[in-house]
Image (cartoon, rainbow, N blue to C red; front, top):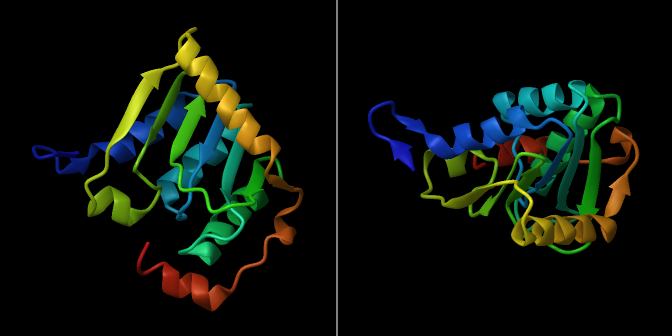
Length: 170
């Protein structure tokens, strides 16, 4: 939701807080993932703090496929292939982040449009020892286990011009 007083979109801040507070692990599943500077910096910073960062995007998304590849390729390059990237065999529409501190899922993509224009909603749950969080983590790990791991950033190919055009709508 939009905080009318500060004119900030709170979902962006909540996502960034989740990433910045991760200590051990971070799982991100996004169908549309744009290279927003504050997210790129936060994810690279998490990796540099020793957080095990895992990102899943669709192998073929119905929109902004080249932007997705550009984003995760850039993250892998900035961490010398340290961030683990996985390609889901099917178009996944899940928007989920899971850390050792919190889990969130809902309708919010990591895109400017989601943060500035759309009315998005996510559920944020503190990651405490409970069946719900255990079940969510099991499902996340299962999804990552059937996805294709990208070993090197050079393996991710995208079309520069298409990615440039997609940047205007994401």
